[in-house]
Image (cartoon, rainbow, N blue to C red; front, top):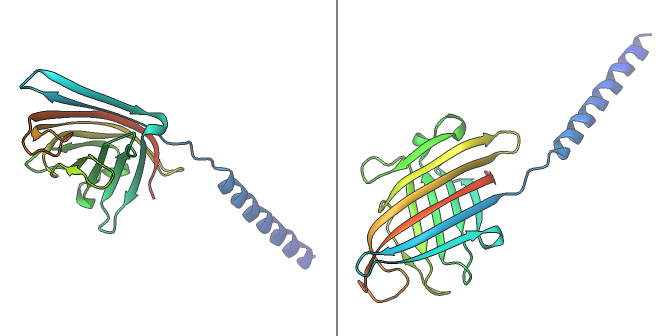
Length: 186
């Protein structure tokens, strides 16, 4: 009787473990969805150069860096795209459950925003970190899928036109907005 009782519990435990593993593998992470819109505003001649990216023309990823900061990257692959953005939130500034608004400003930023405009396949005009003023808002963290959903907007004032290699050709204000859904933290 004792052996039968023990055998019953052993089989029940193994079946339970197998079921848990099946449930883990049945978890399907929804695909990421990203959009980015950038506008160059040229105050000297009152012109603009907007560009919108969506679908396959833009991608995003999230990761924890070696220093434990959260990095969210939005990329538009060259040559179709020229704009790349990275948000870096130091570990000490990460909010509980990742959700909340992270402000970038010259004094006491909660996130650093790095913007890059890729001029050619082998070079890039990089705008300095700390030049952007704006927000990154993480609306949702899905713990089961380890995904982030949110939005961002920022402005970089009085920069040399990144669309040319000529220094100080003309100045521009750069405005970038976008959103992301289901970025898996790796």
